[in-house]
Image 1: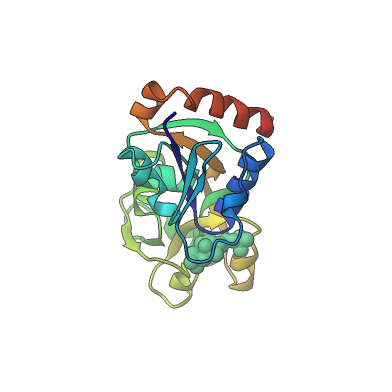
Image 2: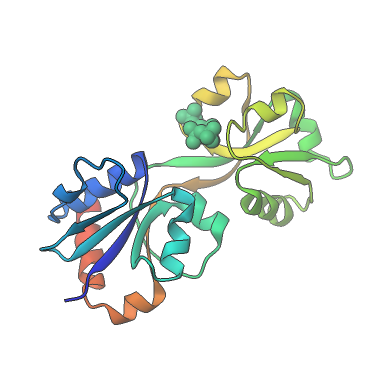
Length: 211
Ligand code: PRP
């Protein structure tokens, strides 16, 4: 039987995802004592788990280097890759929001003045402003600590993930608009879905655990 390769995001999301495979009855003991290794094999279940950066999970799945992946809806939307999204795993729930100081609210509505938006998610931000708000702001791509941008005057607002709201609160910012709701999803390579017969039963087993 062929191996199924599962791409897990390094960190909390991946740990949680591995837990779901465990609950579904798969032997995830190979994932204990990870050290610096990036690939782990369950020889009996014929599953290889690979640990990749969250934003790279859709890439591995699109090209078939992984058959299956678990990743946040934010990454799926931002990457816009060709793959099947088959299951909402209902964990890692959070929201994508336009955030900023209260004073930015007016400028956010204006179509004349050029608005500056800092974000780790330029594609999501551009699409939201174009489709929903009929605006084309300057999008400034950052890689982290996004909340800093409006505080130091790099941008007027940010488009970012809000989970507990603590980061915003501690930096004197708030949610101005909600872009969409997010959670972890199971994604599958389009060819694997047709060619590997273990995939469908795997999806069904994971689905039963979620429900
Ligand atoms: C994410 C996000 C927010 C924060 C939201 O950042 O970009 O900054 O978490 O969580 P909260 O609403 O519970 O405070 P992350 O921790 O991934 O760090 P980085 O983007 O700054 O690298």
